[in-house]
Length: 138
Image 1 (cartoon, helix red, strand yellow):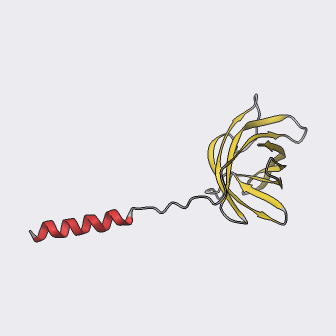
Image 2: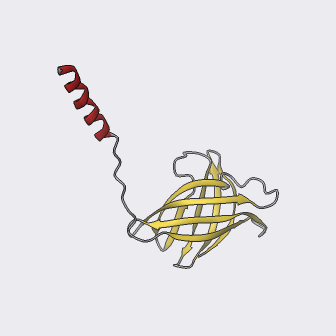
Image 3: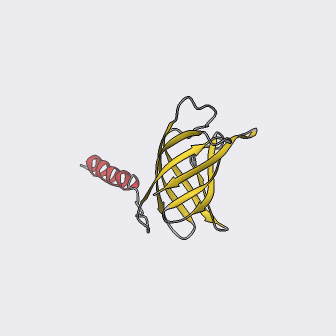
């Protein structure tokens, strides 16, 4: 009997440790149509991303992009992923690969409720590997 009591207590404690707290965003999800261009204005990547603003300076979300044509050296900005970033000095900066320490794509630009545009850069340990501009519309 003691054995089963210990097993039940252990299982209850273990299951309580696995629970995750989900924090709902304070601002509703915003979906944008995205296109990234190379330095000469040729489209490289297009798709959608969703943003939610968690507080006055932080954002999170997800993205779903595909390559346009035979675009090269876009970095890891095609497929699906999570994003994270924040507002600073009037700009919104986003990391499309926030769990990586290398092989990142960063977006930086002006943000409004209907438009986000600026520059993207693909970086690695050697530095900036490619860059261009992007436009995103709600």
